[in-house]
Image (tube, rainbow over all chains, first blue to last red; front, side):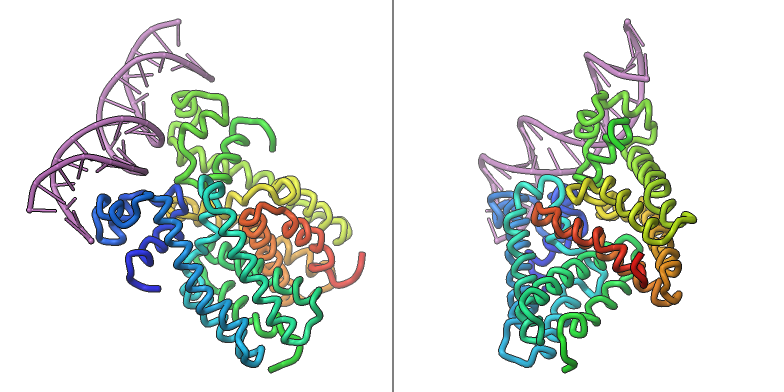
Length: 182
Length: 182
DNA sequence: GTCTATAATAGGATAGAC
DNA sequence: GTCTATCCTATTATAGAC
């Protein structure tokens, strides 16, 4: 998640949204000319955003959802997911791609995938909450609430240019999701 | 909050963000030609977004922050604020202008005002939480958490095209913010 | 106060050289 | 695989008629 072409695309999309991410910005960020971007992504900007979403999906599968569903002790699972979240959001200084791509034109283009990704995260959080001692209904409620807190903290962090709310929310995740101390 | 020119501008900005809100969209929504928009807003799109933010600021002062700081009983204050929030966000079907205008170019242009508006809301929520029986530190924490929950629920609602998370969060606000039942 | 017309620039996309 | 050059459209903004 650092310097591939797709990683640079992610960075532009998450900073500007779909409509705000012009080919000029995308080309500048990747170091490629516009025509070269079209060689790699014949479907144009839409395909670039799809590639960005796919890469984020992979990162989450490997670094957030994967750890949450692993065979480890629940506290350790959540702590590893928190590390993944902090890495992806750069400690609260970067926006969520799912959030910004659901605006404007992006809504019609990407909403089904975005909703599935939100749901996959929520389901993984619910699984670990059950493993942490909560009944299924409570686990489901806590999981949705956790997604809401992460997203809301990112919005507030961006709005005030202060990552503190995000850091507070994710550091609190183990205690928030798990019943017993671990 | 329904059919003035500025209200239509708000609707376009909150749906598309600053960069995605083209003059064509803004003109179409208002029923005015582009040149007429420039007559009303000589500063162009930037001034239109500033007018949108100012109107939202006024709506919040009248329908959310005002009720929260009123002399009524705390439960009633929160319930009135919830009505204001539900009206502004159309029961979770509309995005937050503060959220979407903090993206891309909008960040540099509007962040100070956006941060002040988030802070004003948080401070009003903290005031009513103190009136509802919480100590100042707890009230402050609950207030920031409430802003986070509202914003996060709106993000999730948009991402999955389902207003339920927003409705759940705002209906829970009185119990969330106030210590004693009222 | 709103319109038509227009200018200048930026955006999305393609053709063809290397 | 990347580039330069180009095309067409959309976008921002202004001038001037009514």
